[in-house]
Structures are given as structure tokens and as C-alpha cells.
Image 1 (cartoon, rainbow, N blue to C red):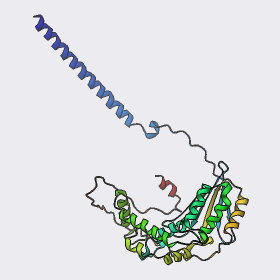
Image 2: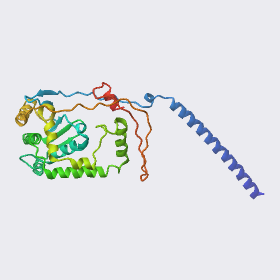
Image 3: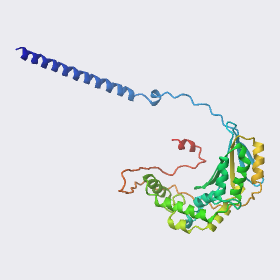
Image 4: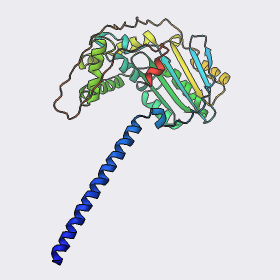
Length: 321
């Protein structure tokens, strides 16, 4: 009897325990549901408290135009003993002919690596290294650039190198061949990443496969580019009155303008032969398109349409949306 009663009492205790657990779980779920419902009713502003934004004080920008048409924008910043320069030239791959796709990119590379009439590209590299300075060039879709970053004490020599690159590029043949190899390597690997495939095909769908905004270099177009093509492309666009230059860092504006005049004052102005920018059609169909690549285990989805221009007042808001 004792054993039976023991098990009997134990069984009652277990039943009671199960009831208590069931009741507890039911109560917990009810509380969770009510809490979630109440939480869902709150607006985003109730869930987060944002501190006020720090005040932004825009620096003073001085604009100066040199006699040869070169526009300067100067900003003083004495926090660090460095000076940064960025010159922008109005040109780009959008102006390439269909048979020379890749010309702008190669020109942008060899402008820096191909040296000048007084220094090879390798010699420029070594001198910049001794100054802990940095110079780079490139050409994108609608603009080309040359950037300089240097210590304040070496700005005079850096400006001389900058001027030499802009006015006297040599476009060494061996560096052109190296740039071609780099471009071809990019072509051979452009299907390795899903994102690149998606973006490339998306451009064709948005702008049209023959649009300069959607074209991409091929082996044949790269191989066909000659040194003379590069020289002609440079001569078509590189003029001071087709260039703007931003300078910021540890300097006085008057002193910096004098230094730039000394370095670039002899750069002769000219008339850049800029073709009309191709118009974009805003008429397109709503479509769903698929790219089948069975040898990968990931997918990319991209959706969108042609947006506004940069001079649209809503452009900043659209960029951060």
C-alpha cells in the first residue's frame, strides 16, 4: 500500500506539475502577444530617440580663375600639415567611339604610369616615394581626374610633377601594353562575381545595349587601341579651360594661387572638341528579366529605373534614400 500510495501521490504531483506548466506557458504566450501587439502600435519615433545633429559649419571656398581659364577652388584647413589637390577634366568614356571602347580607361591609366617627356613613370614613382606623396589619374564615364596628396613642405615639387603630367605626358608604349593586359584580365574575370553580371546587364536593360552608358570593353576593342589613339584622345580634351581644380589643406590662398600660376600658367588654353552627350530615352517597358548561371550558389536581385539628373533639387535626398 505504501508503495502504491507513493506512486499514486507522485502521479498526482506530476499531474499538478503539468497543469502548472501548461498554465504558465499559456500566461506567458498571452503576455507576449499583448506586448507584441502594443509594440506594433508604436510608431518609429516612439521606438527610437535620435540626438540632435551636430551643427555643420561649411568652410569658406575661394574661387579663382587663372588667365588660361583654369578654375581653382581653394579651402584652407590647418589641422594637418598636408595639401590635397584634385583636378577634374571634362571628358569620359561616354565620348568613345563604338570601336574604341576602353580608350578612356587606358588613357587615364597611362597618363600617370606612362611618364612625361622629362621623367619615366618609374622615376616619378621613386621621387614621390621619397616625399611620401601620392599622385593618381583616371578617366570615368563623364570626367577624368588627377589627384595629389603631399606634405606642405613638398608642395612646390609636387606641383611641378602635376604640371608635367598634365602638360607633357609621354604615354610610354610598354605602359600602354601593361594597361591593355590589365583591361583584358578584367574582361576575362568579369563573370566571376554575380554582382558584376547583374549590374552590367541591368545597365543594358535600362539604357539599351548600344548606349554609351551601357557599353563595356571587349578583347577586340582593347586590342585595336594604339598609342596614337591615346595621344589624339588626350589632345582633344586636356586644356586648362576644360579643367577645374580643387585644393584644400595647410596653405594660404594667395600663396597657393601664386604657386599654381608658376606651375601651370604656361599650360595653353584651347577649344576642347566635346561631342554632345548622348540623350537617354525615358520611355521603357516594365519587364522582369533572368540571367541563368547554374554554376553558382547565390543570386542577386536588382530593380530600378532611370532617375533624375544631378541638377535636380531632389538629387541629394534620392542619393541617401
